[in-house]
Length: 299
Image 1 (cartoon, rainbow, N blue to C red):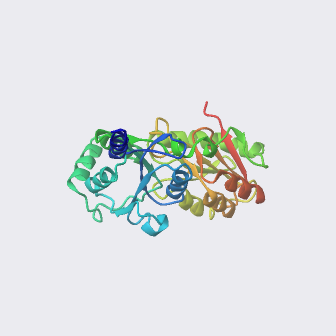
Image 2 (cartoon, one colour):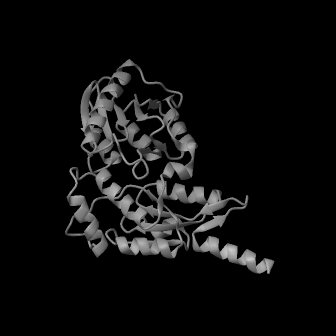
Image 3 (cartoon, one colour):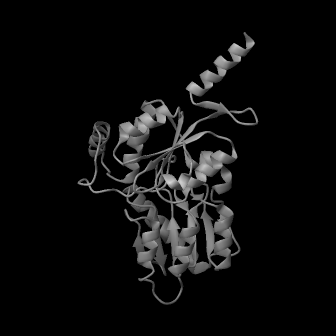
């Protein structure tokens, strides 16, 4: 009888997407909706290290099944919302995280299912048609289905969150601090319009702003526009009122390398509101090339 009781408890946990790790702590199974970039793989690694069960929905054209090297993975085209939700339910996921940027396809290229069409109909009625507005509607749709939507920082922990002040060996000089101040104001103003998170400033002049192309493309574009004299800075901040769980500003090794190629003096982010993927590798790379990484407090 005792054995039957234990088996019934285990079955109940599996059916609800709850599992126990080696320490005996019950863990909810995580569904990772994976776009491009290093963040989805970093989340998988964190799950493996903590024995947290997970399942990956890789978005076709952004992520590939071979990247994850795991049976707990499925490739789904963007716009197949019902298939995504059904896959997460079949995998017994109770938590969902959205990770990595996804390029907006043209409407002609989209193959939407009925549920995605209904979601976009809701999107058409909102004031701003930026990424944050769309992601909020998607979060609400997932929560309606009973999933708990979590932020990547909740899985990765505080070790990847940007700290206040200087995070490496190098500090911004007076000119860089002036550019950072301007960049914060510009980025927040753009954020109110749900446009982008990043700007490049040099000598108190806006060199470029991020739109749909992403931070790496912004840096590539700005590398051809820099003037002589004091180098510029990249400023990347969370949009005012942004949905924290879905699109927290993120920098990584590639951000540092692109900033070096663009001949910038450093990168400024909002402390406590930015993810730094592979934190120590990023800081070491910046240190090696004389780039500062600076966490501005959000006043």
